[in-house]
Image (tube, rainbow over all chains, first blue to last red; front, top):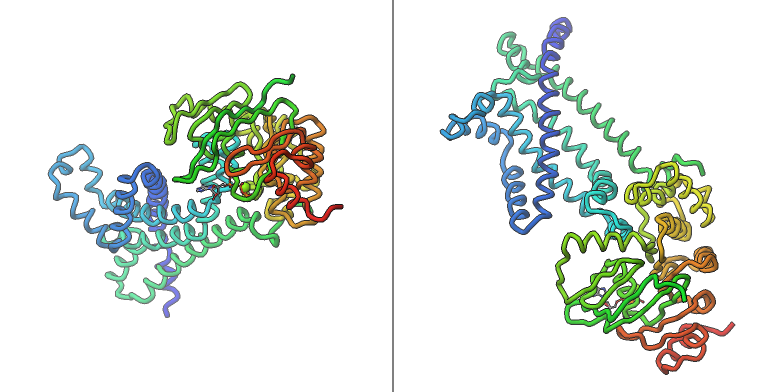
Length: 233
Length: 258
Ligand SMILES: Nc1ncnc2c1ncn2[C@@H]1O[C@H](COP(=O)(O)OP(=O)(O)OP(=O)(O)O)[C@@H](O)[C@H]1O
Ligand SMILES: [Mg+2]
């Protein structure tokens, strides 16, 4: 293997890291907000719950790559959109990619959140109720913190899978890490070295995130395992 | 006579077609300690849970302090004003559950501070000071930073009592506070409750601890199939009840005479 070549390729690929990260951060934040909204919808009414279930069914039941293509090529099919003020935005590959990743992440995250919410004990909720807590306070102080702790391991996995999924954005011309790697291969024809470099970049990212999530889990789950007790005896 | 703290008037409650409470009248005046006894399924928990609207009575009237709520029939839809009223009413009550129900993501101290701080909006320093005093009162000053999962059942229940006290309630409601405990842990919780009775707190206690109930309460109520079958001073209800059924019940519960 040509170490000099690899040393030269790395910085080139790293130039795509900011784009990769911004795709991940934007779609994860948007996805989280959408997931909360979906949970609210699910709790609001029968019709709301049906809609939320259908949404999750569609976005988890089809490949993300197809969703990206559908948004990138499909939106232009709607004259109403093409003539709207938003069109200059919706025409952007970056916006399309974020939109697809975000909508997809929302479906998975809302299911994870649902599992977390189900695990909140009715006793904890009754204790809050009987103390005269309002619903928003109860959500903020009791329900969501408990649901979040429960959902954290699954959510950590979702975050890493979204970071990897950003590589699909390269198919709509975005020059993030994978996009740059493909461009480099088409010039140098040294696919193995280049893609290995890209793989290492993703691996490091995923490892860092996994560490962070484990650290957070440790900090937040002292209440579960006596072994982790840090309080004075 | 002391002012009324809790009053229930003609409370009815059904689950489906089963009528669990069939017209309950009950009054607790300031400083009263009322024990509620009865066999399993007689409606004791339901009765207690109707006071802070954990169960919504179908019919009747609930008063706590200066808040009164009148129910007009099953499926009553509460207006916004009524919902706020229910929350104010709940704010005047401290409820202690059989299964403690501490918030598992908060330390003992945080559990006790939560309601004064985040519901009543009192100053943090004051909340902390009072929470520490409450923990000391139940004998757990040294456990302030412990997580509920690391406490014994008896300790968890004592934290729960401290939590109930911290919101400065007018009345404390206990639903079988020692039934989930190992026998050797029952005493420490009963001691705390007894001390509260001696302080003159207004309390309603559902319990199977007959000797304890006889000793601490100023009134006792025997519930049978959703009705108050016997009510009076503890000497009467526990030792010489009018109702034959109540007599058999207290005999059966008393166990070997000590
Ligand atoms: N949420 C509910 N839904 C349906 N039925 C209920 C519900 N809660 C209580 N019941 C029924 O109401 C009756 C009275 O229950 P309750 O819990 O008040 O009895 P209890 O006197 O507290 O009994 P125990 O000593 O076992 O705690 C029981 O038959 C019970 O099955
Ligand atoms: Mg009960």
